[in-house]
Image 1 (cartoon, rainbow, N blue to C red):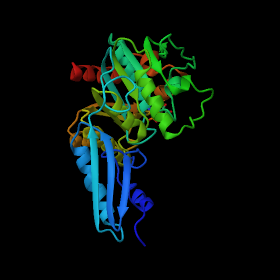
Image 2 (image 1 turned 120 degrees about the vertical axis):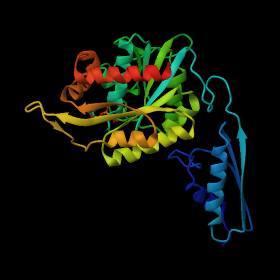
Image 3 (image 1 turned 135 degrees about the vertical axis):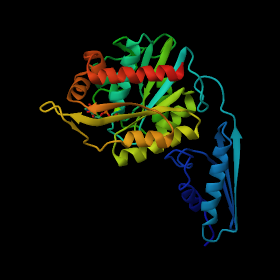
Image 4 (image 1 turned 180 degrees about the horizontal axis):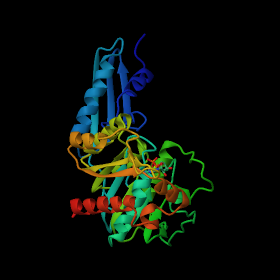
Length: 346
Ligand SMILES: Nc1ncnc2c1ncn2[C@@H]1O[C@H](COP(=O)(O)OP(=O)(O)O)[C@@H](O)[C@H]1O
Ligand SMILES: [Mg+2]
């Protein structure tokens, strides 16, 4: 049986975009496949400034093609173009006009407290007299709308720009403001990419010192879209002290390294629990994990947030803890983290 084009395409699904969970086929990089009597030629096109990306893809792709039954030669040709300039461009990280620093809050694993951290960090920065925006990039599972207790609908300007919602003097954008209910958005890949780009480029953020991006977990489509759309000043990785979370945190850190985004540091969330009844400390998810991982990644451990009932309750009620109780230990830890980030970026 001669090798078919479909077989080649299927085989290429095993090749990932370096640092990301998405494969090169679903990301639409394949421009042509030519199979002739066991001689395979694949044409790819991608936009990047990083020479390692095409080299890795070429190497990985040729490897999987050589493993096909009946292959004689396998050649992968990559057409590399520089990321285009201009608004609405599909790829190419660019500075967002008027915004000094864009910071991604990321994690490998879900439910570790990214949104909680992103919301409270944004408020802590604002309290330190910065102009701050918070963009909920979790298109499938938005939570910033809930955490800020508003489902106000954004309006648009005459130039078709979306006006963000204002709360606690922060500019907010979330899919939760656009959906009618809280059910996760059922969206296909390309739509998610478009929403993500619109949230970044088509929102009237105005002049900001910091735009905080609350990312979904993992290293998928949305992350890839973000790093290709905006120039990030850095990323903050949230993890719990548990080994499973740390492994995923490492993956997230690697993803940012691959695209030359500095990891500003690690935040360990749910670090410990102080029992209100006896004031004793319990290391529910183990201890020292964040510290070890930060050392391994050679980044600072920016802070440790305990498991805290008030933090959870205030988030659920729509008034993040830093706004509701600025003197609480958790709020002070967030202020310390905000200060460390300001200093790092100053
Ligand atoms: N330090 C904490 N103490 C108590 N509850 C927390 C803490 N951090 C997060 N939570 C709770 O855990 C759940 C998941 O947090 P969330 O910030 O939505 O995580 P993610 O964005 O990573 O999925 C939420 O209900 C949140 O209130
Ligand atoms: Mg979240």
